[in-house]
Length: 297
Image (cartoon, rainbow, N blue to C red; front, side):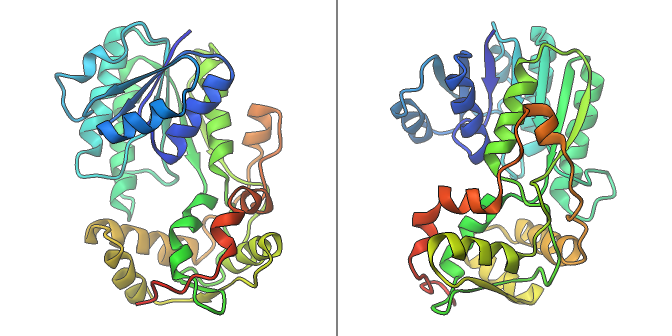
């Protein structure tokens, strides 16, 4: 079989490409920029073909699934995200693809308080009507999200985020990729909606303490206001509308503990228990080891 992977240079898409390649499954990896294509080719992964395409270009997408049995669909949270996903879903249906695995979010609905959750719902509706067998993946808070905030850790090892004492069933992106690889190669014709979590629910403070134990630093969380988070997040280069969504996620959803529910889906699907926050810390020990405090404006 052969699998088409969109977002092949991203956090999860890149891991799906690598996981499939390690399992000797041929992959056609789709990226948007030439520099991303070059970086993916430099990994010299066996059986991986790299294609540069703008998924928002409805004329360019139909050729992508030719000769492909399954599609992994992940796109960035951009203004044309829905157009990209619709183009891929329609192309997959027209090409007779046997299965499409879509990375989505929890709480996707037309009334969701977060814009990108409404976009995912619209794409899911397109997928459900397409006739293609599918799996929708709904991961919990990514452990990997902590990496972007390393520059915010001050000289005392404190990280300010507007999550309060809200616990969340954090998941390692490698577990998401492992589940995706199983679903893409299963040959199943059932439609599946999978909520993916890590093995335990942790507050940001508990997670940072575990990371600190691994890397040999004292790390902790202090609460922040929504307004302070927005100011700093936009300063990182994020669009204001997207920053508002993330602030709502942290302050309005994670703070009250709505992300704390744990499932056993990762272990049931892959046969292996999900990775812990300590596993994540060992994977990124070099990133967390040195004091930051360089971007606390």
